[in-house]
Length: 145
Image (cartoon, rainbow, N blue to C red):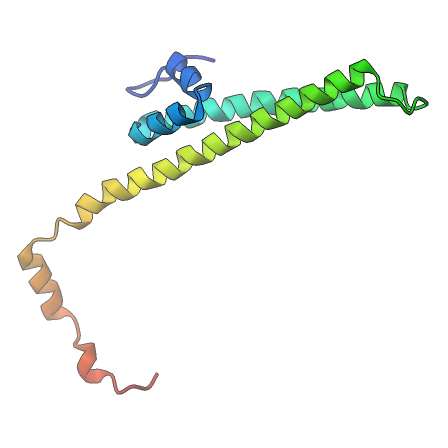
């Protein structure tokens, strides 16, 4: 994977965060900027694609082994090993997906925080001008719709 461009996270930082324990990941994500979150999402999505390829390869390999040993009712050591690797890959993929969704959630929070100050910039004169032009719905409403 190449380095990220711009003022966000570099690849080693992304890689470190992707493999951090859950508490460390949560603390870091909560403090990242939108740009840094985008970099982390990019890294997570690349890791998800890589892991999905690995999962697919393991699935094909397991199917091939199962076909070769279909006459045996017993699972051999190779099948057990591939099954365990498949389960581990599935868990890793699920963890990466959950972390990716966490980043999207944090991006939404950041976007809302970034919009909030702009929405609060109405001056008193703007507010009074807007309300003076607004129709008085209270006098027109008669209780029927």
